[in-house]
Length: 131
Ligand SMILES: Nc1ncnc2c1ncn2[C@@H]1O[C@H](COP(=O)(O)OP(=O)(O)OP(=O)(O)O)[C@@H](O)[C@H]1O
Image (cartoon, rainbow, N blue to C red):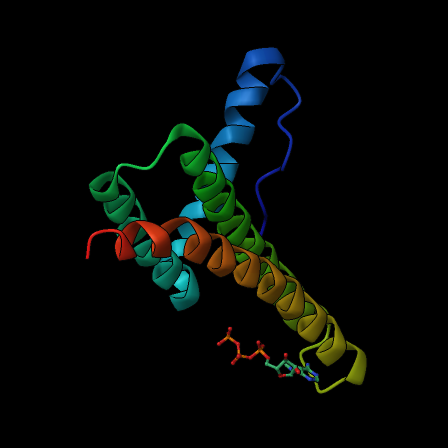
């Protein structure tokens, strides 16, 4: 089957930039639609934002929380992209394919631990001060 060209020859400047944004949003949509992990992260993000508004976080605290949300979501999407590419390149069992996936998953785990620790440092004292 004939595939559409990735780069139309006459697209220039702003048009090209808008098209690239379109592809990026399409990528976010397809990651959210296909990955349970990302849906879970989005629910955790929503709960965190509601909790942050309820507890009245400071600007600095919002910046830390925002950083954690961005790191974990984009890390999870990178991991998904690496998983898909690995499955494409090596659909059969291969020790290196497994290693690639494990390393990518490990990178997300590091980001998730950072986010959980940051969340604890910010939210736990505020919650305890309510009692
Ligand atoms: N092609 C492969 N060759 C060797 N080991 C693999 C391969 N694919 C996956 N693995 C091993 O299995 C683990 C889980 O793989 P993968 O993340 O693809 O499965 P999953 O957890 O079912 O994925 P999904 O996120 O789609 O549910 C990997 O981290 C890796 O250790």
